[in-house]
View 1 (cartoon, rainbow, N blue to C red):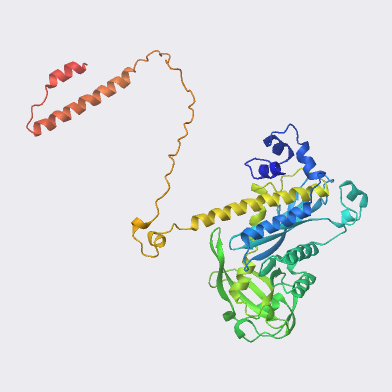
View 2: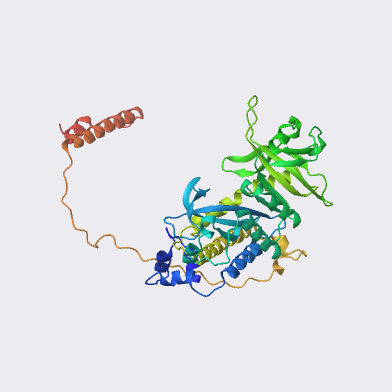
Length: 449
């Protein structure tokens, strides 16, 4: 397992059983494949260890739990869960597997902490096919939102510190997921569709009236907002500068527990004056009643961090480099890849902390006002040993003489003419300075015709 994870963080172009075995000095990939398929180790226990490791290095009470899924392109029909389905990675329908993931994002960094393999109904309805792929009989069809609920339940039961949960509209529009989060008092900012129906409480952010109460569509509620309800906020730096948008919110649902509230958040792209309003995104929010518009906007804008986790884990930890088909092997490889990525994140976080630390000043060393002579002497340091690198022999000691090549006559005349012009100018300069100029006839005789 140590060699497998070390290979995942190594600079290999491809990180599969063959390349990992070759790097470890093994003659065949049998050991690496056995580790994923049959070796006796607790994969779910390792998953929990990865989560605890991430929390140990990145924990923060302001952290956000992020839900999303990603595709793994595959050929054939034997890999567990594979079929032609939409893949956000490819942006189209492809033959692929889909994995649902949970990421932990804090001001210190972000990493993946949980995973589930999505099985379409075409698989769970064919038990012979499931048995061939090693899928246990107790595994039944489960939607992605319910897989998300299972991962969130594990994080909550483990005491993972966080403030918000966020996800895209594939999860946010599912009302039973929102109800489950509210029952567990987990604050959320979940994207939803424009036609999602919500119960408006009337009014909008900052007490601006004008929104009627009742069950309304999300886009209808936002369309009735006055212009002064929108505020321009930045949710962080993007690839092309600050990510500035116009934001507004409308309170929804009338009665809640003390200190809790729910609202509809809208994000609008900034357009030039005189143009029609930009594209609008909608979010359903639940959390502390004192949450500001900036808090909600910042949480909604943090969803990109799980996309960065996917990109980093695939490029640097081999998340999608596996060549296995069985159910167990998929979970084994994904878990070890998450461990490799978590280790890379922890190393980067530790290095950033070290760079931010400042060396103590002289006054900090002598806070009592002692003179510099009172400072304890330093221990003598051993001289650093310099490593002499061997040089590559590039040529023999006695080079073989080559045949001299005569200079072309045309090039020789050009050089001599330039010399003559230079000498003439020097002679003129010497005459102006009062010196004795050289004899031009003698120069011409030396140069020749």
